[in-house]
Image 1 (cartoon, rainbow, N blue to C red):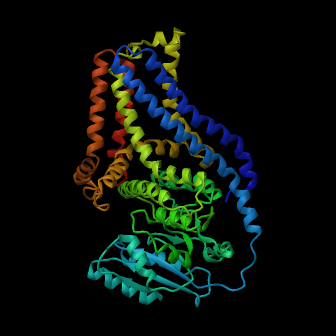
Image 2: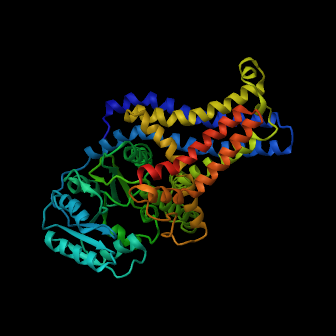
Length: 520
């Protein structure tokens, strides 16, 4: 947890970064105004309107994100006050630790199971359950033997109905403990006081779950940058949500009251069961607590695994948006406030917004380069000497784009002392944009959620790895080729600024192939 002195030092920094977030959208809207003022025909004006609408959507989303980012500053003080009000526990309840697994090998599971068995708690009051969906007989036999060796209850299903959530709900049928902790098979405990630290927060009978921070093990610049996806959420968004009473259960590394699960009717059978469970918990008037400390670390992700994760998140978030809108209208007995509704809408739109907005901005930028907009044929000298409103507004568009690069870099440098991880985050958002968008579209079409983007194993080395990387990034490479062709065409038309603009965008989307090739 960040100390209070560190939090106070960060307040001016937060205000500065909030200003940068808002500035990105305002400057982008200024560029849209420039296009409108200088539209030579209806096509350019239509582009200006499209650019303006995208900028307006961006402004709303950035405002909500900035609000959460700033509000998280106050969470440490709130949690310290809450913690001081807790009384020592005199009688410890029973706890079930559920570990869902499918393709993980017994050898891989054993490494992490050893740490889970080391949780500091009365062994008579804690039970472990391996909820296994393995279909290979040899794998089943190995996991059963592993569980017998470590005193773990082995629960196996012959089908994979509802996948992880199905395995969890099936395990609940075999357990009767008062509290439930969930850990993924790749997570190992780094602080054995997990249960003892979290149980005191359940003195409030209305608390359904306590979520802790999820982190990955340190491994490389890439994996540490991927870890920042979660870190930024758990450091800034989750605390703000917790202050609004809408902390998100993150699927693992959390402790849940069993009676709350039963009241909800088990974990909702959706791809992102954690988001649906969190929402249903709120709808049943339960509360939640977030503890900003990592008690376990997960295995670093490859780029393929990251794509699979992001595809699933976007599929589930799209499902959730429709579910939320329907559920919120049909139930009048919940305690949903305006802030909680905004929180859930922002969560559902989040990655979907980010992926769609990046691609749409790219398309509009491409069309603008080949429009009749004056800037497409402005020389460098004109930029330096001109004082017209139009040229000044054009410069705002360039500054807006530069800020979109500078802000994540500045944020990661300020909080995590790394420029490179911020730059990596910037590229990753473009590299993942089509994967995320495909996940959202698949959900709208009600496609099978587990027949997603992936088209084959990347492999370890050689020609096979290159071909697999090309296959898995085919859409991004086609899009990049269009952008690079546009860049070449603009160059031939003496539109140097437009050529450089398209070349830069082409490089951003080509990064998908590079990430596959470099990081698996």
